Image 1: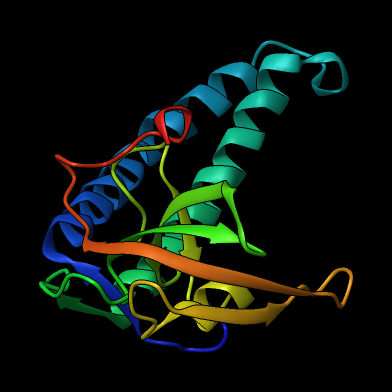
Image 2: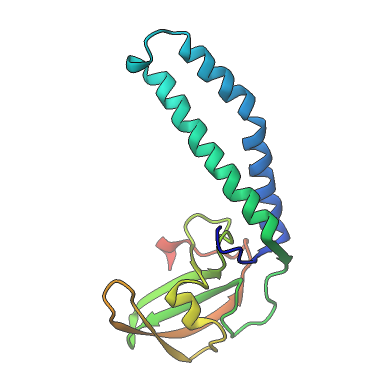
Length: 174
């Protein structure tokens, strides 16, 4: 996170990410031992197990760096308690371009804030859609520009509720 932006996290998210970071750090010794074991199997050019272990090590180290930076800059808070307004930590139901059948449900978050439900999409406040919706009230229509095409999309907030992991709505049930 090179921009040193503060990230808002609930205590639950912070704890979950901290646990993941600790597990990754604790796995370093076992992964290093596996790499050494695979190295002793012979020719490294033809050793798929060695290369797979090295790849895993690289991915885990990158995740450790990311999580450390994220957690160091995080602000711990609670999900908003206010209904009817799209805020960071709100699950928002919207429709696009005046078509009430073109609907979507997602969580508005900051980088690193995700739903505990992998089926609930999270849009960052850094994304055009997330930025456009912050502060929008139910029934309000906002517009944002699509970076890839430059086109303008209008989005109408149907409802906005504080995030509740027990109430998450999977994408396939929206």
